Image (cartoon, rainbow, N blue to C red; front, side):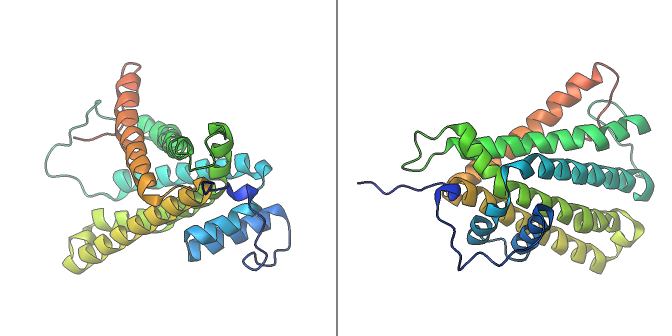
Length: 249
């Protein structure tokens, strides 16, 4: 008989690993996010994803969207209020964006792109079925993967908002010209990038039961489609109706 890899929801809860949890579903989700943020291993996600009941999936999705909107606004503030004027003209691929265009990008387009990226990563991981899961529908697997991946998405969104955006503001300000500050900012940016990749890949692995090496391919493809194809496709379409995305070249 072949070995199968059951979904996390089909495994009996390991009470030795599951901490004592009290309080509402919200409090338990916060506990779960803190736990995976401190130790973003595959095993930690597999343990704590059990607190994410189906009713919490749309609510956590709203939190992810809200955090991305805040990140979009912070990024807009960096580029419009903090960045030093460029000595050379700035060229935009779809035309120079107005302030309204920048608000549209921050509050609508940027969260939408991240949401598309999230959907591509989850659906891509759901299509990779381990032995014994061939008859499980992609929809069922996607719901299972969403449980840990939404925890990861919130953690990485908070890292981006609380750490990456201030570091970016420091880099593009006058202080960014100081060598020590520039090196420190680059190290912090690289560290948060690696941390975010580890968090999201381990979340996908915990929910899908698939090798992380296979998921790296899915993640890269989702990044290419979500970060390049979607951005340029939306930029070209919106430029036809007078909305110019702030995409420089």
